[in-house]
Image (cartoon, rainbow, N blue to C red; front, side, top):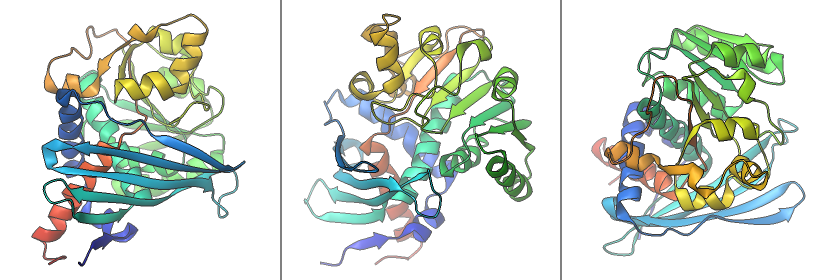
Length: 322
């Protein structure tokens, strides 16, 4: 049989942000409504600077099952930073045949940001106008590209440990997108001025603190996807209305929550529910304008399956595949 394969360039061409945001909203709602337990990701340490991750699962709403297989290793082009290389393999549940295979790095970078955008649309105050991004890598770029579709941001503040990197990214995206993007040297100021904050750094130690975050802010915790890296302090975790992408996964593998729980600041009940429940209208997201809300994104394979199904369908509609 001939198996359709989408390389990184094809993924970036077919996986448009508005369509992917809608696909993520539907996928997360379907995940929560299914009530079906999903396998947690498995991470195998290959070497001190290399991990191998396996994320299996299924999404009956789109008749798909499959897995993402990915390596996480240092990028030789960017010392100190890592890359996710691998594939998403999607099967048709009705026949068991492989539907398609897609480049995992490109899918992950876009679908993660689009899932964050959908969560932000559900949890941030409607009048939110200033976005702060903590980090200046690939996820910083895709998050800026995605979140502009759910709020009319007047300002985007970009902070990272390297002012050179954040300045270059801010200048490039400002020119390309026609947005006001400012590289910041002061993380505390960036946080204090923001209505929405995204941490996308994967930092081993906190780079965002409760004392910096104003009431009414929505915070997306994205950069840490396994036990270990902690992007925010425990006081911020404890202060926010905390909503998971997938509750069992977050309880087992969300590093910031684990640290706060070990310190006795929160229990498992601090995770009030899943973003899919908010999308479905069965869980209140933001209860009050002055409330801090937190969306914890570990990432889930249903997001990959939904993104791949969407781009595969777009490819068929455009005659790119038979």
